[in-house]
Length: 358
Image (cartoon, rainbow, N blue to C red; front, side, top):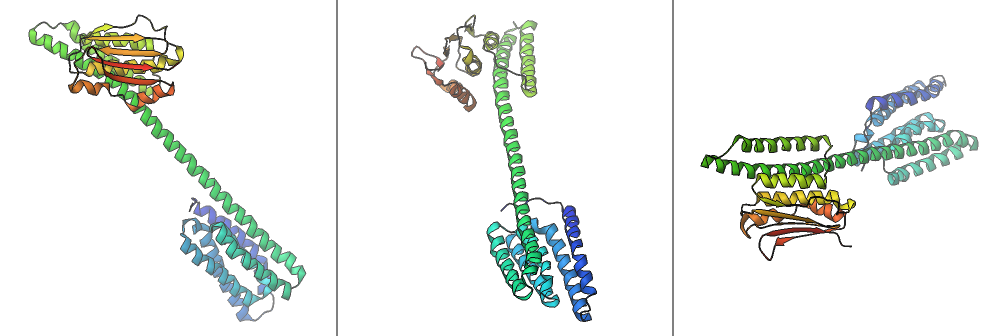
């Protein structure tokens, strides 16, 4: 059950404002000439009723259903005592109890309690007070009951809408975090694989005493590029370009000492597929760089609606892990209606192929 948040101070002010409408009737009671005990009892009971009304108005959204039902019974019992003390001309006191009941209870219980109460008061007024009194006091009572019921439904609807908006915002934030994490994984995986491969080559050269400052600078440049990519991703300005990925793949493969056989241009690829193919190329080259099976050659071929990455790495061992496609890439390829095929080549090595059926 929805429990709207409600400003207690506002509830206190509103309830006290509506209690002001009881002052003329209370004044008539005091000056009516009725026995003192009846007047005193009526004022005391009404004071308790007013305090209960203020309490219910400020706390009703916080209570459970059982507490609300208990409060409902009390909010109907107290005005009944007042009517017995003051007479049927005081049926107006039910307006406070019915207004709270119609707002705080579910619709079915509200009408199950409110409609019989209105029916009983209508019969009593009609029998003992006449038709004129029915059209004055009872119509007002019924109108307030209906109006506050609509108000309660409106408050619940507004709260449900606000809750839904918060949930949408939360889901959007979670989706954005997942997107950012995926892009960071792609960027860092690609760059760190290139850095690791190049650093391994430099270390081997150092051990042989043949490493140069230029080779160390290459590792530094790759690290700087990784930082730039991360900053672009976090700031939201990163876009995938197939032409740029071809250039980056050539540099990363060269830095790792892997012969790169890459296309000189990407014009053959349909524009609608280029961004997705850029991610595929990045993932494929990252897999080649991560392999520990000694790939020395990487070949990339492009067509209008397909892309293929091949290498000559040895089948088996850690190399096979590099061919597994992450869910983000699978979703991107599925988004353009394509399919992914990965696995060992007949002539040795591994192949990644993405194609969009005509």
